[in-house]
Length: 293
Ligand SMILES: Nc1ncnc2c1ncn2[C@@H]1O[C@H](COP(=O)(O)OP(=O)(O)OP(=O)(O)O)[C@@H](O)[C@H]1O
Image (tube, rainbow, N blue to C red):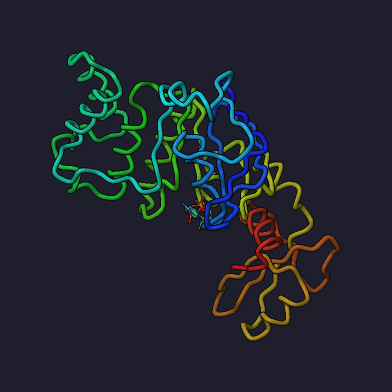
């Protein structure tokens, strides 16, 4: 199973070009799509999920033409959108049963079996009779995954799933996603670098509608070996360093400001740093947006 996106472009009616010639090949397993707010991630996810049109380009899922054979795609698609609303006064069990019915699972006994299995998988079986309005953020996200899994999808899209979750819930959600990723294509769209580091063997970075990096996270990190430097400076010196160097990130350390910079040449008055995926991400983003975080 393979999802192939070629030269996909989209400009909204207000003139914003959300996708510019996006080309990606996505195989089975977890694929991370990383980008800052407004990068075009949701536009791409919604287009793959057949919820909006592209202006040009193509998407194929094996031999299915995603942009034209929408019904075919919807049969094998599980989608957890960024804004996932729930009916607050309905229990998880009733809601899943209803969604399974809508997805065409007509036999009541079969539905019950599927719903029970999914509730166990996402660890909500004990809370199955509780109204969705009483669920925590993490429980709602796990419920969201359960509904996305109805009908054994081959392609699962999750848009910004861990924003706002506490560490324990995030962990639980990660475990669930990586389990699912074993035999399906799972696309995880996020601006949280750590989520991609933990989960994905393949990824792309998207910025201002363009794919600016893609590949295996370890390879992308390895390409920065010897090029990332760090230094503790006074906050007041930051402006000077920003002018003189490509500062990719700043953080506070013992009341001082630590900067990380990218340089092709060795920087003798800096300390060589071990690169990580955040460095890859920030170097790509600052090179385009010019903003160091
Ligand atoms: N329906 C729309 N009409 C006009 N502009 C839009 C529409 N949807 C998104 N945009 C714009 O397109 C660009 C890409 O937005 P998109 O939501 O795809 O980004 P994103 O990476 O998902 O960001 P976020 O994480 O903030 O949701 C942004 O500049 C956004 O303002």
